[in-house]
Image (cartoon, rainbow, N blue to C red; front, side, top):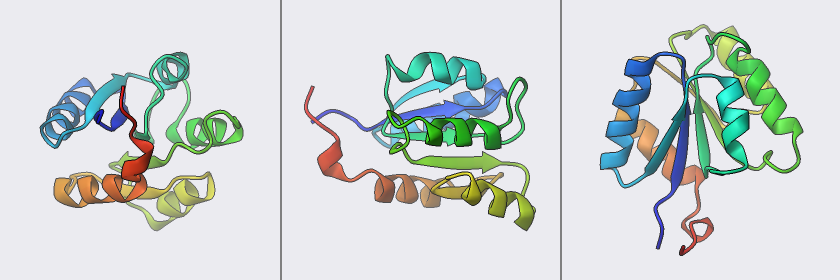
Length: 129
């Protein structure tokens, strides 16, 4: 069986690298993108089973990017989890409104995040290569 694919979208390279390393050690195949433009360019080639998305980014913020992905019928079924330093209830509400499956505030509780990703990716959706 192939590994579940996760794409991390965050303009902070350290955050991307730390999350990629942590999720890789949990058995996920991880790709990352520095911004929304790179995510959009990579979705066709490397369709992930879930997307971890920062809110504060250049070019397009996470809320706008989530909404754009959810409006595309080809990708709307991919669960999106926000990972943000913004923990205001209004930000969480807005994240859910634009289609996110969940919203985690940094610093992350990695075990909880991994558990939530596993809940969102049914094992029968991870297919053999």
